[in-house]
Image (tube, rainbow, N blue to C red; front, side):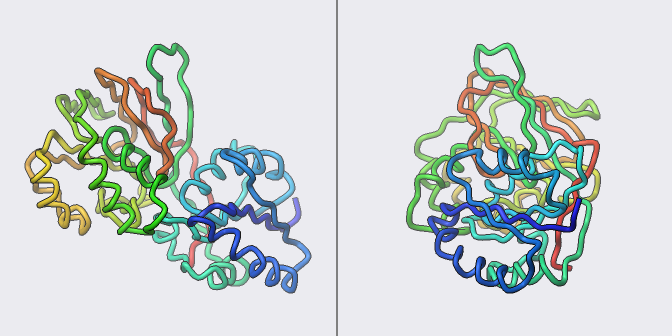
Length: 306
C-alpha cells in the first residue's frame, strides 16, 4: 500500500458547507501532491461504501464532514488494513475533531493532515441492537458517542433544524424535544455487575468528553483510557432539566440527584417500549428494545493536531 491519502467529502455537511469548501480543498491538494484523491458522498451511508472500496489502496482516509460522516467512515473499516483516519470538521457538532484539537478552519485542518500530523491510537465503541419484533441483532461502530432515549430524539431534531450550528443548535433541539418526549422504562446491566433500572430520560454512552457541539455529558471520558463512559439521567421534571442545563454544559452535573455517571467496558440495556437510538449524532433506529454498547478490542489510528 502506497502512502496515499483519500479525502471523502460530504457536500451536505454543515448545511451545505462541504459543497462550498470543495473548490478550496481541491486547489490546495492539486498543488500539494499527486498522492491524494477526492471523492464525494452522494447519499446516506455512501461514505461507508467508499471506505470499503478504497481502504486497500489508501493508507490514510480523511472525512470532510461532521461526526456523522466520521461515523460512516469508521463503519467502512474491518481491521484488515491499518488505515489512519483524519477529519476536516465542517459539520454542526464536530465533537471528535474538538477532542483531536483539529481546527474548524478547513485549510488549517488540511495542513495538519498533510504536514504536521500526530497519529494516536484511540478507543472505539460498538452497538449491537435489536429492533422491535426483530430476531437478529444489528451491529454498528461508533467513535465519539451513542445514546438511547431523549438524546436520540434531540439528534433527530438537530437534523430538522436549518438555522443553528454547534451548541446553539443542540440547545434549540433540546427545547423542542422536551415538549414531545416521555421517559422510558429501562434496565441497564454493566460488565461489573452493577444494575440501574427504572424510568430514565436518557442513557448516553461516550468515548469523548463532549457531544452535541460541546456538551460535557461525560466529563471524565478519555478517548484512549480503555473505557467507555455512561451518563444515566432519571425521570427529572422539565423545570429541573431547564434549571440544571448549564451544569450539563459545563460537566458539573454528576452531583445532581437522579443522574449517574459510570465507566465501563460493556453494558446491556433493555427498554419496555421501542425507543430511538443514535450513533455519533445520527439516528440509526426508532424502534430499539435491546442494545449492547461496548468497547472494541482493537484501537483505531487517528490524526491529532498534537
